[in-house]
Image (cartoon, rainbow over all chains, first blue to last red; front, top):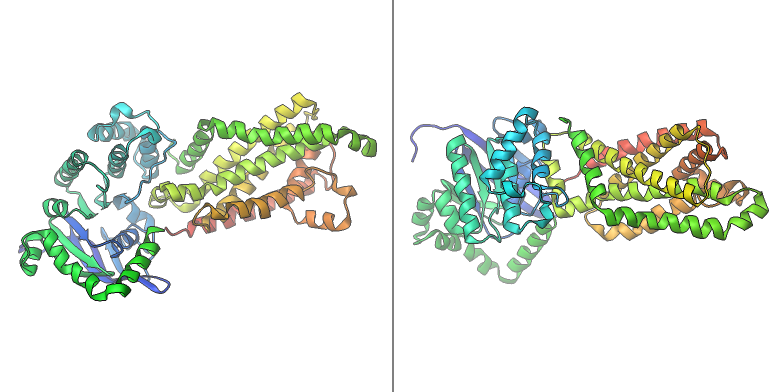
Length: 270
Length: 248
């Protein structure tokens, strides 16, 4: 669709991650362009979260090459870490600190200058509509409020890339809408690249410029939502997704299920 | 205000100050030991050694409370792992040594705080410390606190969940405490027990505290100080190494 060559902010070549016998990521390659919203879709245990953990330096890859914003994260972890923000699949706030303290902690850790700290925290807390609750302990927050706070936290240091690992799981439609609203806003205003995984096909279709579908540790298809639908002759993305990933589960029957279970086990624990 | 080490320290201290039940709960055990053993065995000790047992016991109980509080803060890495906060610190552009060091300073601080509280309680019960060497006692408290927070961190870095917690309590923490000479004079103990106690790091911490607070000592303040410092540096290094290698 684009004629001119655009700058890649994420480049991944032949990424492999093994946990003992299990190969969670099996030779994955892809590029994400600067300013793009890129979505990873796939059934549970497909290797999406493992890929994100490797990209965000939490796991070392078994083999393969990664370039994040021009940096090799294996060689220069801390420099790479400065370039991104992340909202994890599971909560990662400190429940015994207040909302404000959680953000302040993050700001110090990411080297936000002291003079900007207050202003940015205030701006972000107002952005996610939690300013009134800034001095409440996080343990008194609902799931949706915690998510909003985590997104605010991920944006405090103005990252070039934002990783979102199933950011809307368990949220009501209002909160979901709200979240995507300001993620799109940040994407547009700051040119921030967004790398996300989700199980909600409508979300991916609406928000993402390009989509990669992953299963059993491999990318089986990528393109725009339109291209994916066209390729699979599906009427919507959900249909396309099921056509691409559904068969394999059926074909592998019992052993496939075991495979999935061991995936889920190896993966849920980490 | 700009340092991650300070921020991490502040977090540990805030968490400690905010959990009042934990603070009060962890005073229960030292008080029980001081009262039950102090008064229960006091007359026996006096007829054998001719001294005040509370004076002998109090430094041991102070060391115990620092041991438990610091070890617990170290092991809290497992909680952080389970509640997810560990990930937030591990993806941050800060060297893991700084994170570990800030944590450890925080754990040691809460340990010392707890130790001083027990010292005050012991004084109310009848402990009469010599005040001249109190600054040196505090240095021993700091070393005990740093040592056990690092040890807890080192162990927790290798554990995925809390299932190993009882194992650590029963096969590491309790033996370290009971074999350290915190509760009874090692001079009069059988030879094998003496030898075991020489391998217990807490022995030197307890002896140092006892020496500085009461003047009673087995090894002398100099040796205690050297052993405690060297062991603390070694464990701090091991803890930092294992913490740095954590993958999630």
